[in-house]
Length: 100
Image (cartoon, rainbow, N blue to C red; front, side, top):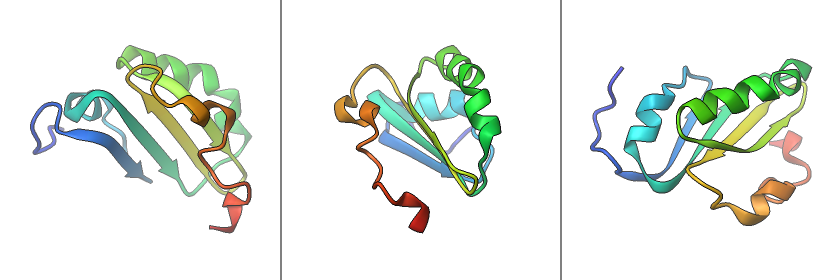
């Protein structure tokens, strides 16, 4: 699926509860861009699959910055390079994000 946007058009791509076409997300990201993938379901399976998620991102020229889960949601944050600084320690998300 080709997105109807030019190459390097966005600083950030966000997707929720949808299939992620990482090749297209990377194509439309500006250099140094970030991608946030959010699902309204979660669970331990995502934690167990962290290596596979990391490999999938790496295969699409992205680095896994954060994979945060609960039994109700998952957030996957990736970047084109180490551009996120404090995100890696988890401060990107509020402490009580499950309330959202």
